[in-house]
Structures are given as structure tokens and as C-alpha cells.
Length: 370
Image (cartoon, rainbow, N blue to C red):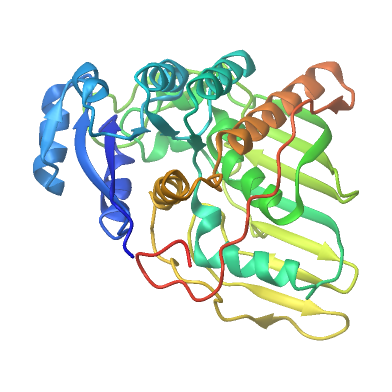
């Protein structure tokens, strides 16, 4: 029996919204019923481009009784306020990463959702793609034995070279850790479980950034940098495994892998966690590295799969995989990394979460539950 579709309202019609609109069209359980933006013309343009029935103000979207999920695609500083507004309206809410800018705001969102008995969710949902779900199955099935370590690297030279308005990337709540860290930490937690303590060293190599993206009017503008842009951290997992992670906007080039997991019986090369597919490689014992075919679908750009998983959770009463608890644990871990750098010490990560449930085998395109 087919489940009743869940209607979604999108708040925030910026650059990332196109990927969500396109991805959600392919998922049977959800229907994008409205979109809103502080700039109503931007909302109208996206509605026309993607065939959304209604473009409206944020207040109008929140008041629509048919909308069950609010997808919050605003800039980081607006994440918590918009989530709280949606929860107050009785909506479930899935937010772009990070879950909030501060721990305090993140806790407010979780507490408000618990009181209202609604679900919260957080990007990234790339770990639900075929690439990392294949890695999850390899780990769960014991292909590399018991995981004992991990390495993660995101090394680049910042969004000022391609983003038309990159200022928020260099403000508090931005930087490589809060921008890209959620992809890597979420993937690691999905594969290895929660993190219990961290230490780190963080710095800012460039005090200003020059916008070189050619689109006017900001080309040539210099941006002040308010947050660390090169962060090296060590991670202790509850399982006993140890990881290291480097996040940087200060590096012109690197040949390092994105993520590797090291086990008692082998090693696993995990694809870029900012994608849904990518090459999965495994090495067992003294054998050679071998590519592993995907065990799961959704290997193309499917942003919105976390929203669809939330919709299934609403209809079935289970917990959504890219949950607010997971998003908050990632947020808390990132703040703990910066705290550790300032204190020059190991810092306990106070929050925790469960490993998200793996997707079952045999899913068809458009389907997330068996």
C-alpha cells in the first residue's frame, strides 16, 4: 500500500536549493508544495523553474496547514531561528548544515521539537547515498574487521574563488570546519559511531580573502576572516577507535584521500562525503586494493534524500536517519574541536547519538523503506 505523500515547504531559495529541488522530484514520498525566501522574487523564480505550486512569504509558508516538513536552506545564522519558527508552527524541520551556529541554539531546537513532538533533521544526507551506504555495509559485514582508526582530509583554498557572495564562509559558524566538517564527521559517525573526546590545533593563515569569482558586484572585494581556516584534530570514538581530521581553506592543492577507515583485517577507502557516489576501494590483509561495486542505489546528486527519509519516519513512527540528534552531535564535536585548540587540551564531547540505521538492501529508485 502506497504511503500518503508528505508535503514540504522550502525556506531559502539560494544556490543550494536547486540541488534539493531536483533531488526531491525523484523521491516518491514527498511533494514540494511551496517555497519562500526573504526575497519574494527569488522564491517566485525558483517556483517557476521547478514547478512548485506556490511561492510565498515565510510566515505564509509556516501557516499552511498542509505542509508537514519545513526544509530550512537559509544561511547558518538563520538556521536556529527558522527551525524554531517551524517547530512553533507544529512542523517537522530538516535544516542545512550546520544544525545551528552555537550549542545553545542547537539545544533550544532539540528541546522545542521534543516538546512539540516533531522530528528534526540536519544535512548532510550524502551519507545516505549509494557510495557511503556501500561502505557502511562493508564495515557492518566485517570486511575490514573491527575499525581501529580513520583519517579524513578536506584541503582546498576556500569559496572566494567560485562563490558570488562568500562572506558568510569566513564568519563565525563558517570556515572549513563548520562548512565542510559536517560531511566528514557525519560520514565517520555513520561508519564508526559517536565521538567522545577531541584535541586540535587551529589557525588563520590569511586575515583577509579576495573575492575572485567573476560575477559582479563583489569581484575584487576583500573579506575579513573571523574564524579559523586551517584545523587539525584528533578524534576518540566511543568504540575505542582513533581518528584524525584536517579541514583547511588555506591549501592550494593536495593528493591526500578524502576518508580512509582502518580495521584489524583491512582498510577501506571511502568516497568524497560531499557526493552520493564515488569509488569504493577495499584492501584486505596483504591483498591488493580492489574496487567494490555499489550495494545501494542513489549514487547521483540526491540532496533531499534526508527529507524523504524524514517523511517515511513520520508515516511509520520510526526515527529519521539524518536526525537532529546526529546533527547536534556533529555541531558539539566541531565546537569541542575549537575549544580544544584554544585550551591546548583534550576536550570531552558532552553529547552523543546512535549510529544511524543503515539502509536495507534492494531499494528501488524513489524508495527508502522496504
